[in-house]
Image 1: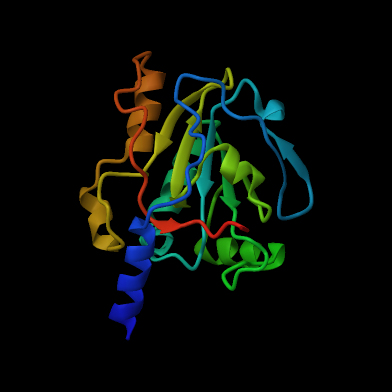
Image 2 (image 1 turned 90 degrees about the vertical axis):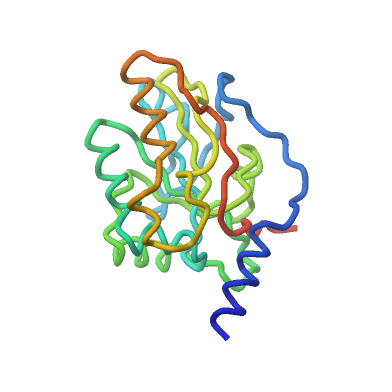
Length: 202
C-alpha cells in the first residue's frame, strides 16, 4: 500500500505541468510581498542588500520529508542564516487542497523539525509560486544582494526521496553560494528541480 502511494507520488512529480513563465538566472528576481506565519509582512524589496534563499515546501511530500527527516534542510538553513542569508520557506499549497496547512499547523511542523529559516509563509493563492515558476517541492532559488536571481532549480543532484542519498549528493545551492562568495560565476545557475508537484489553486 505504501509502495503504491509512493509510486503515485513519484509519478505525479514527473507529470507534465502547465507552462509557467520561467524567471531566468541573471535577471532581476520577481518582486513579492508575503505575510509570514505570525502575520508580519515581508517583501523582497525589504531584503535588498542581502542574499535570499527561497525554499518551496509541502510537509506531505516525501521529497521534502527526505531533506527534513535527514536533517539536511535544517543544517543548510543554519549554515546559510549563520552567514547572514535570509532564508524564506514558502508553501504554495491551495487552501482547498487536502494537503493545505493553516499557518499555525505549518509553524508547528517547522518547529517540530527544528527548522532554522528566517521567515516562513503561506502562498495559498499561488501568486509568488507562479511568479517564480516554482513547480515542485522542494524548489530552490538564490537571489543576490542586488536582487538578481542567480540560481534556480533542484536542491541537489540525487533525484530520489531516499534520505540516505543526501550523504553522497552534490548540493547545487551550496555550490552556487560558494561560487558567488569566491567571486566566480555560478557554475550551475539553473537545474531541473525534482519533487512533488505544487498543488496550486486551479
